[in-house]
Amino acid sequence: MAGQRTIVEIAVDIRLRGDIMSRFSREFCHNEESLRRLSQVQYLSFHKRYILLQLFLGVLFVSASISGTMDRVAGVLCCLFGCWLLISWRQIPNFRARKLLKSCGGSFPRTTFCFGEGGVTIENDQGKTNLSYDRIIRLAADNDYDYLFVSTYGAYMLPREEGKKEETFQSFLSRKAHLEWLPVKSVFMISIRQLVKERKNTRKI
Image (tube, rainbow, N blue to C red; front, side):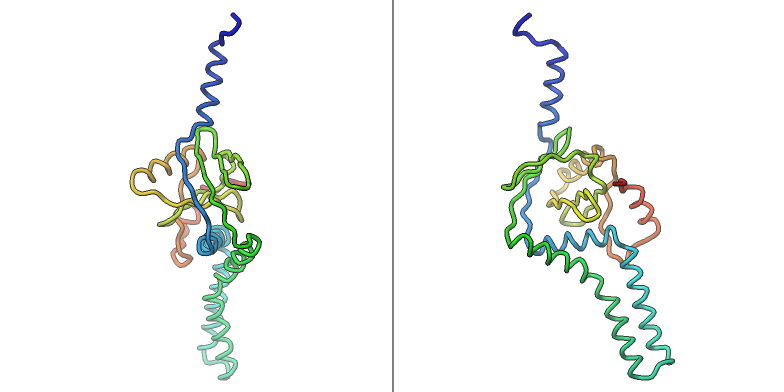
């Protein structure tokens, strides 16, 4: 009859409402410190081989400088270069963060993230976009933030909740993205087990 909806139409309407309805929401506004932190987490997460190679070369130069096979000047220079290699891996992500800060012009819009059954709605003063869960390639977290990586060079950074609320959110997102959460660890705490887990829980682009 005219004006009446079929069961199929009602079911479709309910499904659409379920997709749109927000299960969780977060707000975040970047600053200089958070951009530097995000850049370092990104570099540590996806470029470990470069960091490890740099650390390995640093150890070689320092070892060579104290081996006694060089004269004093060459030994000192070799040691200084080795030490620089050991501590300077953060310079690349810091450079990227400074470049991003410059492009932003010091303006950091507040962004709202609404997580529904069908995906994530991301909105700020520049507009609104929808992110499907299958576009998330990795989920990572440290003590203060959750990181939703959509590429090896891009991620959304969210402030963590406390207690049960955070556990429920992470469980929901893990189920929707079909990925396990990975801890953000120091480069000096990398293990074979961790590398295997990261490989298993990183979606190919």
